[in-house]
Image 1: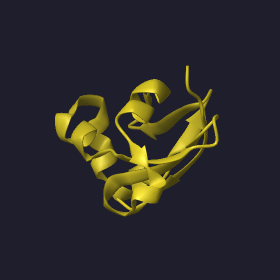
Image 2 (image 1 turned 180 degrees about the vertical axis):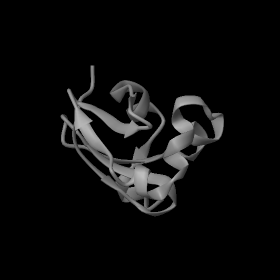
Image 3 (image 1 turned 90 degrees about the vertical axis):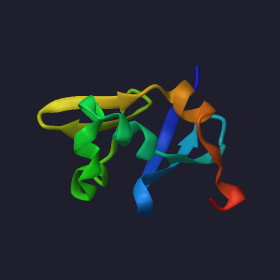
Image 4 (image 1 turned 30 degrees about the vertical axis):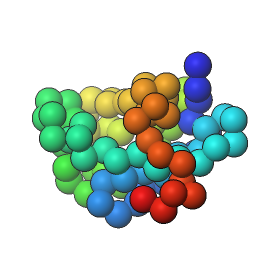
Length: 85
């Protein structure tokens, strides 16, 4: 199981995440936001930018609810940071 050790919000609702294997990857969160539901509040850039880590998972507090992304899924759906996405 992967673990995220650092996360930084980028422009256009993307995240730069460093995983426990030292790899840095960029994840586009727009598809999750487009699904709506618990991810809909992340469409607010101020909420999105308050991303933090909780037990190795990328997490937000949105409308009083913790919303997170499975680190393995995030790894799978992201691209290496050196690809310049």
